[in-house]
Structure formats: structure tokens, C-alpha cells
Length: 356
Image (cartoon, rainbow, N blue to C red; front, top):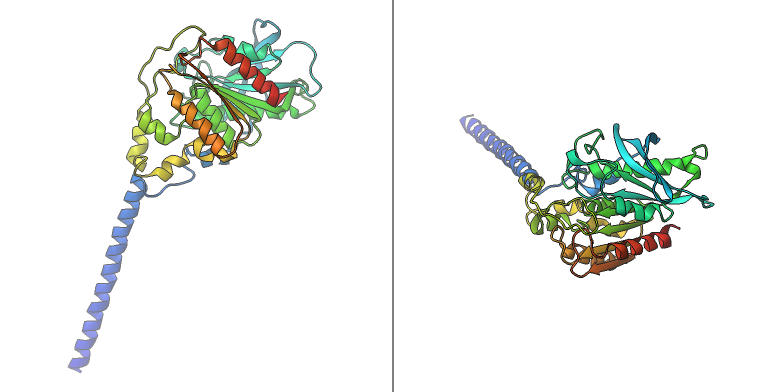
């Protein structure tokens, strides 16, 4: 009897030990998994800044509201319009060519501007020579403000720490696409099947992201674009004031925006520690899905965005068999001020080939 009791007691304590061992191991594993998730071992495809998250969003756009009629351009009309982006009222410059409307309507360009201090931004100011090149050459053009810029609602979250600005331009794009409704007066003017994107600096970053998020943006032109991978943005670049451009005016560098890097590194680890996560944020990881041909322009003396970014993007696009043109301007600056007329001519011709 005593022997049986002792044997039972021994088995009981062995089982109890095994139970505590596995529960202790499970607790340790949970701690490791939590640590890995915070420091980069695990990622989620629906991180708000990821391309997967951008693709999964719903961007219905809205009707355009004509807010103000502006002084006409040389051969086109100018308006301030508004539309909705995630419930927020976003203002935009809209230009419409004069003259006979082509059978399918005028092709359109979504014009994505570079960094301008949001509080200083005005819908009618800056990039005037740039927008004029397309407006007077037979294109409907819309230049969205981005949320928190000028009178537009929302917060200016920054181009690189959030998808918000890209979402704003995708809703502008959708608002144009919605005009295919034959009852729309604008829809009789715009060829909604032939819409391209143009972007400068931060606007180039937005353009590239939009073109891998959608499959119906027909062509893109990028000047001095922030078009490197997020790993390169982390390791090789600190934004130096994407200034408001005017031909002939040089860039004034300023150091901006390291907080988004630090925030992501604190949570997910550096690119060296968690390359999979950082790749998930980059449009460059999805170039095989880009929606159309791309034309790149960059000055070799750009002291705001390295010319290597455009050089490398050209090679990356070629590597995945995509159509790309690249123009480099020796000694020119971030705004391609010296060669502005030539770069603008090439941009118009590129859109003519792919949109008209």
C-alpha cells in the first residue's frame, strides 16, 4: 500500500513538473514573440504605411464642387474646386483647355506638388510655370492641395510617415474617373480613360506609390523624385527642404523630418534588423505591378534629393521589364531650373505619346 502511494506521489510530482515547465516555456515564448513583433521579427501587411494597406483601401472620390473661377490662362480656364477624401474637403486647382473638345475628351493629368510648408501653401500659388506647360498643351489638369494644406481640411501628416497624401491624390483621380457618367458636363470634356500623373520631389514619391497601388494610371512623369526604397530613405537620405520651385531659383536646403524614421525603427527595428518590413513600405518592391510607362528627370547638382535615386529607379524598372525614359541634366538643380523648358517639352511629348 505504501509502495503504491509512493509511486502515485512520484507520478503526480513528475506530471506537475511537466505542466509548469510547458507553461513557463509558453510564457517565455509569448515574451519573445511580443519582443520580435516590436523589434522587427514579425510584420503585418496591413501596416498603415505599407503598399498592401494602400492597395486595400477604398478611394471613391466624389463630385467636384466649383468653388471659385480664376483669371484664365493663355488658352485655358482656371478654377478652384473641392472634392472629398476620406470625408475631408480637399481643394484643388483645375484647368480646362479652351477650344474644340476631342472626340473622346481631353486627357487629364493629376499634378502632385513637392513639399511646401503647409501653413504657407496656397492653391493658386507656386508651380505656375509647371502647370501651365500641360494646361496650354491640351490637358485637363488637377493639382490637389493635400490634407492640411492651405484651406483644405485635415492634418498635414507629412508625405513619408503616412499614406494620407497619396490617398488624397487617389481620391482626386477617382473623382476624375467618376466623370465618365454621361450626364456630367465635365465628363463630356475629360477623357477619363487616359489620365496620367506628374510629380516633383515628394510628389514623385506620391506618384510612384499611386502607380503601384492602381492599375489604371496610364503614365507617370517624375522630376527630382524621392523615389528610393524606404531602406535607402532610412540609411542614405535626410530631406533637405523640398522648396517651392520657380525656374531659375535655386533650392535653399534645410534639414527636416527624421521623426518618422525613429518611430518606425523603435517599433520594427532598422532595415538591417527587419528588411522584410521596410520593403513592405516601398513602392520599389512592387515595380512589376506599375500601371504604365514612366519618365524620370533629375539634375546632377540637386542638393535636396540625390540624383542616384532616379538612376537606381531607372535600373529597377528595366530589371522588371517596364518602359522607362530617364533624362539627366548636368549641373542642374532640384527644380531643373536651367533646363526647365527642355524638361517640360519632353514631359509634354511623353504624355502626348501615352495619353493622346
